[in-house]
Length: 251
Length: 201
Image (cartoon, rainbow over all chains, first blue to last red; front, side, top):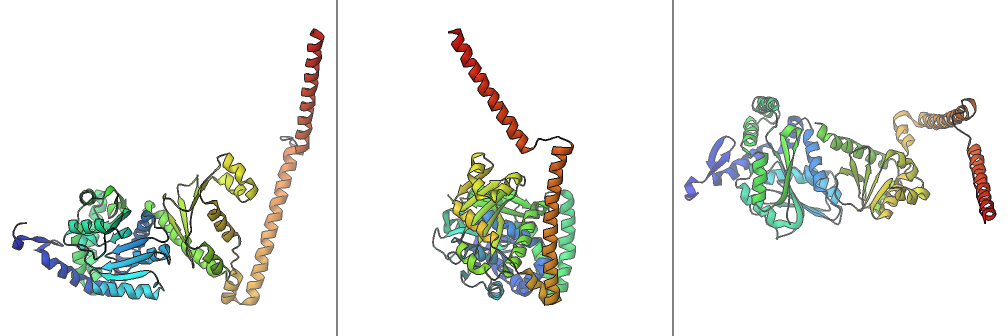
């Protein structure tokens, strides 16, 4: 930690310099942006829509609230939120990647969702918002790709209003042995092939599978959130723990 | 997988509701008055608490246990009686219905759904033509009438069977008569008691 040269982080199963990860992740998402939604539906058999609806349910969003959809990518959560907060509320779709943001913006505009959505290209580790400005923050399948997760959680804590809540939807550790085996087989053998076939990009989907394995498990992430200052942190395992939704409050 | 079942059901219901709203031209203007309100409904028999959020173009469905503008909790048996506004206070007294928050919001939502008249035959006409759609509409209406009258007949028949043939339950008039004679007996008893007391003195 003392020497800047020694600062490394994970990029899938590889270890890379910390300042390199951002651009490496950017490459991945630049290359998958166009086919992102199709691949999501295919890879998860459409279940990702239910995971996202579950997230909305856990957010208990009300009309008039201000929501930050961090690493919002192609805006699935933003679309659900935007309808629910209504004209008096606001949703900010933030992503570090300009390609993903562009795809998301086009998609939401095609759906006629324009009134209450703002688009911001931002790094989760240093959010460009004032303290205490959001009622709800969600980060869906994004925390995994952040270089310094503790800094990102601290930054989210800062911009969250007291009484507000953070929801982290992320791949996690399957709870049963059998499911783990099937899941490993699926994600290391099948997934890159699907990536090759549909998006012509096996490396990105190899990275996806690897980065999921490197992401902290349920309990570790819960502790990280508590360390960042969040209270009453709890999590729900979805689809046998393949995905977990963590929820924490700022008081 | 079962854990995500409510989300799936509500997602499908939300879509169906949007389709129904689209069939009623009057729905959108009336929805504007509801926009921004949240109403929660829970049946005791089901664990699910459905939260309806009205926006100016749709009614969105979610499920959670957090505070909303108005929340109603009831059971299946009371649900039917809930439709009659006169019975509401009685139901609340009996603890059959729990209401939290602004009752007016619940009434607005209920009013909205009661006034909803989706023009489904118009939608059907675009597939099978006007004439056929009209025929189907009339048939459906007749069928509904037949079912209603059959149900009434069955009701009547069961009542007659129980009261007259099997004599398992008394007729309401019989009950009334019985009650009246019990009251009369009570009165005579009271009188007798009074006489007895006066004689003793």
